[in-house]
Length: 206
Image (tube, rainbow, N blue to C red; front, side, top):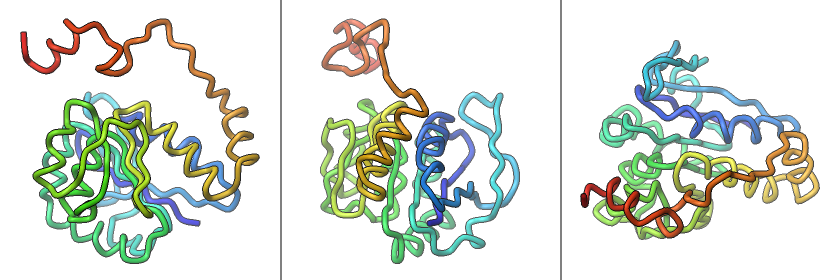
């Protein structure tokens, strides 16, 4: 099973690395980072790069497509080369997935037309103009399309996929071995739970 993680300038690191850490542990999995050109691709903070092992054209038929989000998704969602590759890869993929604003890139390629999808909570309103039906759920399955909400939810999405692909025991084993047992010191991880003043600030309302 080949898993292709798409990189583009100013992607968010955990969007790519979280699912990579879990999905890459599938028995027989081959994980490959791909970009328009092979080589290092900088994250959204500019201080870390992941290496794209191959150019998009070198990985035409991955079994799983994963598109991370990040500020650079605004450019990626209109990039003809990235969108053409996504459409072609989607024709044969088993799963086409995204984390955070990576769903905007999938929607930009026309892959979420009429489908339920999620994204970062600040980007949900960007989905309807692209033909998708937004939902605030953390992980959304609609056929073979799987979208995750903001950043950290990519780990949850990967666990859901692991269970679907390899069964509950394998998914639970990988969860155990990665010791994914979140116990955050705050309960402010969604706009429904965070202090209203914080949510308003990030919405630009104050």
